[in-house]
Image (cartoon, rainbow, N blue to C red):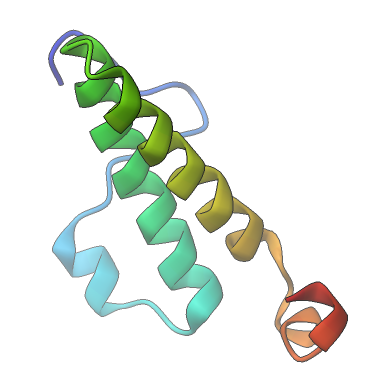
Length: 78
């Protein structure tokens, strides 16, 4: 995408992948992947504030995606 290849730990997510997701952790992982792709586009076009905001959204989604299902019920982890 605009000369910004995916890194080794990232993958492109399709709408079909989204349809097969189960729960907030998988949904957050999907949002993380989308935000990463959008952040790369923003960076390539030198849209610095948009890039920053998308990276913040990506990091928040990554934090949520890493939570285990059992930890999701723990209010101290929200």
